Image (cartoon, rainbow, N blue to C red; front, side, top):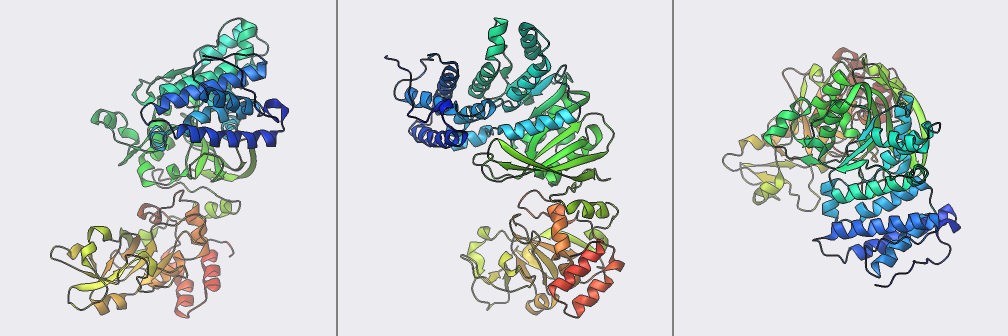
Length: 589
């Protein structure tokens, strides 16, 4: 097979500006994806791993002005890979390695990538999380560091550079040995483990050359969740994979202390991190914000509060351009094992692309007395004062005499019973989420595709019938919407007129539990207020408006709601109601 060094047209590699290099890399990624789409499903992961390794070798040889060649690929794939490596040479080292290692994850079949959780951390976020750990006391001169989901080695590469800087007083051979002894990565995917180790080889290549010995094997291919963890590490850091996982009975026993219902991978990795970390050591993880509020993580929150309370949390303000193909709201959090619970420092980190960040400090929060409940955390500067007020408010929805239920009808299981008109005794109004309007009004309608106004009950369907008034709340809203909580009163008079209604599953129903202490319309007015919207955003990190989260919203006592009730009775406008609700939380609207 003939071999020649790929030559990319100018501007190329280090000869172009950073902006030009990023544009060039983006174009190369599109070309590489087009090539990967031609690969058969069977063996695609191995092929894209070889492609990535070829690109990484080309990158290193271009930087070193030599003609190293892996011989891993045939033409023209090898030329494309080497051109990709040359394009990356115009980027700063850690950004280039992120771009190169992300070739592997980004060229995988989407289903395989999702199953592996292969979404690699941009260097800006990896650096910020390591900065947080450093601020919390991580000492790169002595620390033993583990990344249990090493992926593209974003954290390990940065940590290796920090260790190296801390060891400049040592001879190269000693510094290299120290890094090899104290830095460890575990990666389930053997192809990703090779790619990650290759990144570390590049980071430490000149140190290894000066020491006249190879870079140590830092990343091993293994299953972190199956390991017998020992508390050997001063820092466990990483971006664990997300997604539900079905556990064996043995695994459920192993992780019982952190499980509630469905198991999620990042919850299991957090549990394992506690086992790997020394007393006084740190866990620094990038995870979805839902870990702070979701019911499935309630037991995990209790475990963290007892064994490793948070010391710092950053909320990442960037939904696009940070993780390829991921829309999760994320956070960077540092926990200290065996520490007394205190107040965690909150920051917002604004991310522009892979390499630039802007950090804004915003107060502190404490772990609530009921640690298994949602943890309120400020999402914007004005939230800190509000949260401080709510920390003294023990009232919840149950204290006002209400509970949350889910609309019982999953309509696509009962398609044949949808009706456009009434006409029989067992046909009832069908309430969809569209009946709850954004202005807080209830409007009986079914205007969307496949929606019908009525539902015919059949024998055995009595559980679907709702016979009392309620406050209805949409179950799914996004943070970009003007309101996260969209509520409306389902009037008891409407229910009585029809002898009952059927409520569809995309609605929460706030129904009386015993004797309610406030009326439905007052509760709806409170929930639709700007202050409750702000408070809910401090709780919820996902698009779901869950019963668990609604029942955890701090609320004023019933006696304090009398002025609001008077305004509702007078038909006050929304602005007036917002001011009255804000006053209940000692703020202004």
